[in-house]
Amino acid sequence: MDAERIDQIIDEHQGAQDLMIQVLLAIQSEYNWLPEAALRKISERLQVPMSQILHIATFYKAFSLVPKGRHQLHICTGTACHVRGAPRVLETVQEHVGIGAGETDLDLKFSLETVSCIGCCALGPVIDIDGKIHGNVSIGDTADILKQYT
Image 1: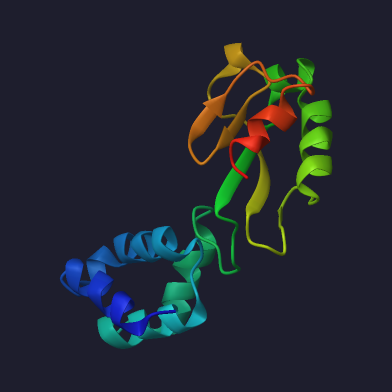
Image 2 (image 1 turned 90 degrees about the vertical axis):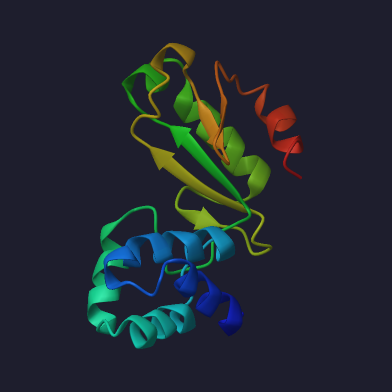
């Protein structure tokens, strides 16, 4: 973690306590997780107890206290995607990337999550990779989709 970069992010948000979530989001975006050293720096600079920062960081699903992969894979397992084959697509993706749902690979290349709904029900099954939606995914499509991110 670059302490100067953390200071810069805090300064970009005027060092204001009421902008703490935006500071956390910016750090999360920069590092793909919230390192403890960064949280301690925020606590010190914004004069906010560490317990309050941890409360926020653990409340919102957008934040992670463990390192995440460069590519975030979200597979929809909601009803529409489920009936269209999402469980088989999930299994195939897990085989290709070598991790299960809720895990990150050792190279910090991929993190895999399941979500209840992405909001593209007519396109199911759906995989969201780094914000890009891949719809009507078949198990045969998964290898080609993942190759784009290797």
